[in-house]
Length: 157
Image 1 (cartoon, helix red, strand yellow):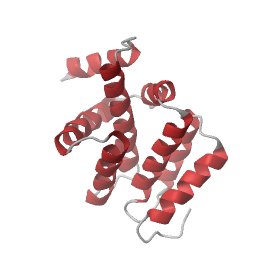
Image 2 (cartoon, one colour):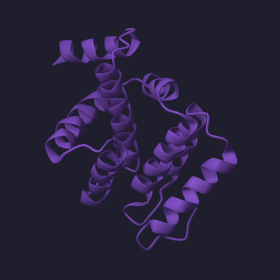
Image 3 (cartoon, helix red, strand yellow):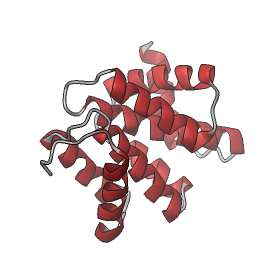
């Protein structure tokens, strides 16, 4: 298991420009960030997990089995990740500004999925928005769009 994770982290730095390898790295990077937001408030329930699954389906058009495998790998990777830079840098290299903004909206949807936005989720989202170089106005607009589609929300910021 440890060797597999070391190989995975090495693959983030390896310059493999083949389309499938790049797509898989982008999918894993996005999935890890979604998992981190799901876990941010220490209460990751079924609703937030379903929001992660929906985001992966919508973002990448993956089937049920592919999403399950990707989510399992993302959770294992997130457990051993020292920071977010390896993942956000992959998205910065591989996604257009519009794709990154849509990714931020997916992240907000996961944060809002349980009907409450914790301080920890909000702080993590601010950090991820900065690491993905999302302009603050666009970041706030993505948050508002995600909040509008969220289940009954606690009125706290």
